[in-house]
Length: 129
Length: 129
DNA sequence: CCGCATCCGAGAAGATACTG
DNA sequence: CAGTATCTTCTCGGATGCGG
Image 1: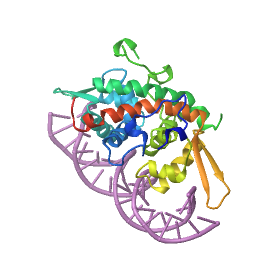
Image 2: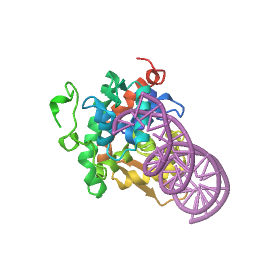
Image 3: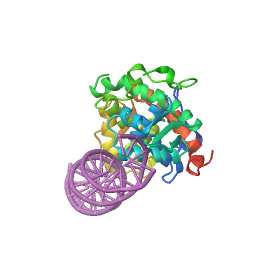
Image 4: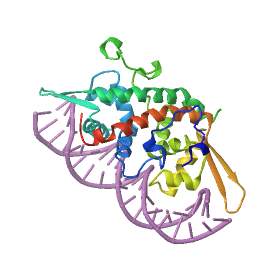
């Protein structure tokens, strides 16, 4: 592709591997992107960005999430090395979740995005400039 | 919530409105977040961040997208004031899509996120530290 | 009780054929 | 070329069960 035909002035640009075709279909980055931009994945990562929390706490803070999706999302994020799961062998059970170092890297990028969405939400929904 | 009980040191933090409960369930920001973090929404916004493109071009670059989802995603992004649609009354038809100013604001936040995903994808999928 | 696993109906996503 | 209509497939979410 001719760089000169595209307007990239003043704006951030993608790494070379992504410049064309945007994303190979079977590319691992597609999978990762799906995980971290999933409806509940974002909320869980953001919630955990404020510190370690247990299952029931996450369930309350990610308002509206079902237990099934919470379990599924946490499992995916744990497999991806973004979330750390610490289960205590006590009755009643207690499981604490926190971000790994990699998870923190990611949430630091997520926070500005979500903040922007939060600030612009009303204008966007009401169709204002 | 006690700020002191949570580890926010060294990391970006959310605006006050989002600090607790993370997100009200019916909040408009939830809707907006869903739009901009949707599987195809991200790819379309990224592709358009490199400049104006027409329908068929987007279809090729967002590899794997169906026509239905392309139409649906573009319509949503247009309603949200992120994407501008310019239709030419010619035969064969020609429709160009580009980012609005607000869309550029957003894609500037999206690019670092996607770049991170791209760089970390292999390690994440292969379960490496 | 808390943290999950399983089953099932509803709605979203995907494939494909068709049209202006 | 740029979509729409239609049909199929799959994922999500709610209900329920259950071991610790």
